[in-house]
Amino acid sequence: MMDHNDFPKMTDAFDRRVRETLDSLPDQPQRVRRFPFKRAVSVGLVAALCVGGTAFAASDLPQAIGRHFELLLNGTDEQLLNDYTVTPAPGAATAENDKYRMTVESVLFDESAGAGLVSLHLENKAGDGVMPFEAAETLAEYQKPDIVWSNLSECVNVKDGQYIFNVVYDGFFGYCGGHFYLDKSRSTENDYYIEGAFIPAGDYTPGSPLRLEVTEQGNWDDVDGMQYYPPVLCVELPDFEPMPYYQTADGAVTLSQIGLRITEQQPDETLVDRIEYIAVKMKDGTEQIVLDDAGNTNQTLYAMGFGPDAGFDSDTAVYVLAQTFALTDVQSVVINSTEYPLSA
Image 1 (tube, one colour):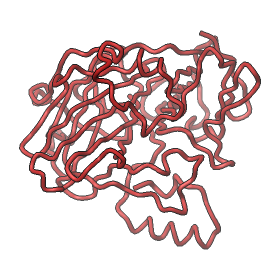
Image 2: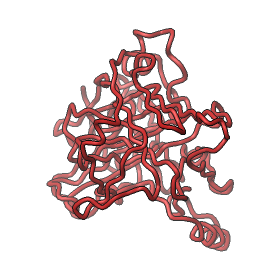
Image 3: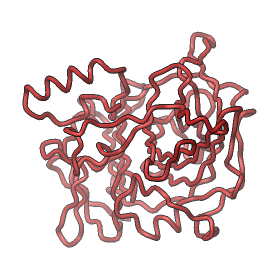
Image 4: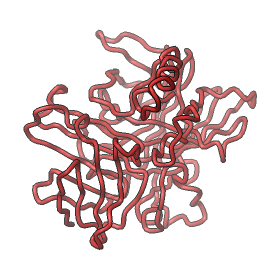
């Protein structure tokens, strides 16, 4: 379920009716998140439940290349898929319990900006048609062609026992923010194809391994005053392929084909809440709008901010992008009314 604050306003009367309806539904996390958004303890049990395996670049396994991130990405080019998307070896990234079998199909992670995509296949072993989550539908009135995620069916958990998907790192506290979506065009009654966008928090250490964990709503224990959610399914993600990126001279703005990272060293107020307009300016003078609050345009799949309120020295906003760019054609990024020149 999309949070009502994520949607553009219509007429006051219509907006009021819609908001009253949404407010009556179970609350879900907002699309723009401030870290820390979750604290959970991961202990030795995690390693025992995780499955690892050798990873190969997609170009090394042409016969195994499927449909990578068609649900999430617009304008995906062959280089992005063939050179940077990683496909695990068959059977290497699979975990199962008595009810479901989960297989990671592909991973695309841009460490420079801190933005990632993952696709997975979840099989219902019982064949009883019971989906372990609910696929939220955005109200038709709020579905906008320029708001990419408004037409996606987000996987949400509103009942005890339903599954929660998380990309995690660094053992104890390394939880990524993110959203996972059901690909209805591929999914069937007992086979669910899911794609997720994720962002590691500011304490992510470059090179840290990532894993995909599935936990159950309501299934948690108290460990030293912290909530511990034991995973019911866990897969070690394959090593990612480093992606090229462009940056400003001071490193404050970083752009890759799937991610944008913006950092201020001495913020006066929350950065992610102040950004209302983002566009990528090409060398031919054209601009591709990424985010425009006033124009009801949002071509980001997920955004997260983290700063001094979470113990960091700087304030950072990170976006997972739904549209890709040929970096060699990029000149700058326009943020609000300021243009930031970029170079390799």
